[in-house]
Image (cartoon, rainbow, N blue to C red; front, side, top):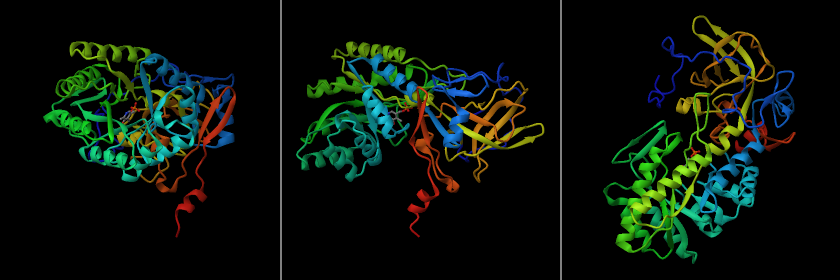
Amino acid sequence: MSRSAHPAGPRYADVLPEGHYSAPPADLNALDPKVWAQTVGRDEDGALTVGGIPVTRLAEEFGTPAYILDETDFRARARAWRTAFGDDADVFYAGKAFLSRAVVRWLHEEGLNLDVCSGGELATALSAGMPADRIAFHGNNKSVAEIHRAVEAGVGRIVLDSFQEIARVAHIAQSLGRRQRVQIRITVGVEAHTHEFIATAHEDQKFGIPLAGGQAAEAVRRALQLDGLEVVGIHSHIGSQIFDMSGFEVAAHRVVGLLKEIRDEHGVELPEIDLGGGLGIAYTSDDDPREPHEIAKALTEIVTRECEGARLATPRISVEPGRAIVGPTAFTVYEVGTIKPLDGLRTYVSVDGGMSDNIRTALYDAEYSVSLVSRSSDAEPMLCRVVGKHCESGDIVVRDAFLPGDLAPGDLIAVPATGAYCRSMASNYNHVLRPPVVAVADGEARVIVRRETEDDLLRLDVG
Ligand SMILES: *Cc1c(COP(=O)(O)O)cnc(C)c1O
């Protein structure tokens, strides 16, 4: 089955070839530690617990659907990335994966930096006390107002994405009497997805300045001449949900080639190289992500080797994991509303959320797993499709999964690995209210982003 985007829109009701499904898991009650947050387990009643709290109690107190985030796990993953890269590198958490003020404080405390890509994300970061010099500002079309605010706040880096932006940021910085530290984002002709990458001569995408045709070199040349800019490095981000390091190898080779060209032409050795994010996580038991220390070792070796080959001092490396930090730390808990067996096909299980709280299945054909969490069950597995409550046939949360055959309305089911790109991409489609994010640590649960209310909806609708 194709895992690419569907030009004709999301599919539904597809009948898959015989043998497509992996066999049902040996134990439907098992919670694979690869896909579930660190402190998740089951209590003696069979209910899932996280941070020592049964999910049934969380659902009672905070309602469903809800994103439950394991703060202990979040901090541990952030720390693991920080420790793996050490003091000679920087880890920037990609805020777009999921950002809230609590998250900003955790990152600050754990010694990470932060990527933002809009005025809203910048405001969130600053309001939670992230020092501006630990913030990098991204985006392919930052507004003049956003740039102005970022320069004025003193952000550590602005990642320049186009020729217009080079001139724009230089002009704004100069008008404020500043010299803004910048990186230039280039596209190196490498596109990485999960287990493979494609190396191409050209990049057909909106981000970055192509290396091809000498455009990136020209961008650096121009930026170096502008008083308002201090060019500190080159930025490259090659994709998402990547498991294989070889795409980074080709990207680093090409970035270092550019650094060498800059050195030879201008006598300047740029001190930084940012390799972006995109490191994969386990959404299902079939995925095998690498540990941060393995990734750090591989990336550091690649850059060091390339720089030695080019006789360059090894620049300071930065990386930008988003999903790899927050993704596995949260799950979404839903209440089952209706169960509709379709003979010979599958059983449709409808939950009280859907594409408004997790658009990734509809948008990217993303795969998820799902488990019954309010109790355990010894019933036979049944092939299910977990769908939402929206007026859209493509409103699918989990395309194919096995749940126990005795599943009943009122049961709680949960989808793991929803920490990244779920709440941050949530919508109000059908005027459904966006779920809260509840952080759990050491037996305590607290709301860090509250549930939306009808008042919130009506406040925006000014009649
Ligand atoms: C999206 C993005 C990231 C983070 O990607 P993940 O897949 O969440 O790790 C990092 N850097 C840039 C420039 C991005 O656009």
